[in-house]
Length: 373
Figure 1 (cartoon, helix red, strand yellow):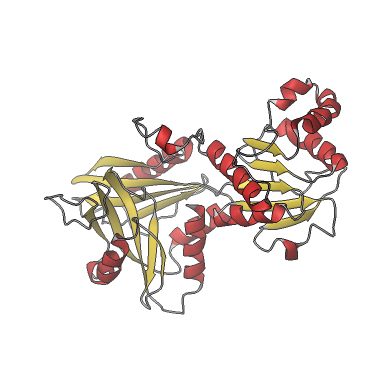
Figure 2 (cartoon, helix red, strand yellow):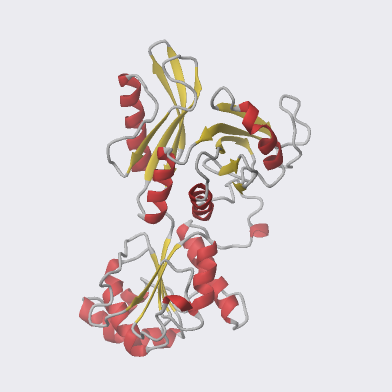
């Protein structure tokens, strides 16, 4: 959802002073649905809209009614996604399920936006705990507690101390589990249902190599909402004008290739410099990190030759080092065009990030598991 969050922030930053906006958030799904809990749609009073909460049929309905539905405060509504559901109005989305939406008015100063920004720009995870069901006057619908990376919680709503303590505990559990969930708490005078959302930082991709074939990789990764860094030892190639959608473009110091680069274990990296000397220096620095994904462009025999030089200095044998990376990089999609190569690389990274096999879905249609990560 990183690309959607980026667009929400862009729309929020473009709001005129005093301009109203409203937000619809998927908080629960029963049965099948195109969007999952945490999907958001933001609408301005002027009619601008970013994000989706369905496959495209529900957005118009929500956009028409969200303003009067939220006149008295936040609202939680169920929308049927089937064709013949008798218990809910049907919107013909063809998914055979029910989507629950939290509808609320928002302001540019809402702490929620700070959490969205930190997740995207600072790569800091957040837990956002929101009341979506209540029979207690002490816990109003839409009341929210936000925990950014373990820091002190922000709670723009006045809540009883006991409820704050319980919601903070839920938020800490979400950060630890890295998973969105629904929680019901018993409080004095009733109970509350909470939407406890894990807001993950976007995937980070480090592309070592700033040649022409890196450009479509950067472009495609950017459209996925990923945080993209391009690095190359050649200053004539490592120029931001060549990669306008990259977050950072860095000229490498081959004596210390990782200087200034914040690589973490859950990140992905692709080496496509077409330079043997650079690849040796980069792999010597990056292999010990054991990244979630590391791919190397070029024939396997070339990579084996590089690892023959690099592995002994790292205290491992070349075969052991080879198991830490993917070479040749990418999925077998055919064609040698740079755009197709980029698609094969980004597709393989996406499969690894979501722990999927990249198997065609028609081969797996009968399995009980969801096709969504």
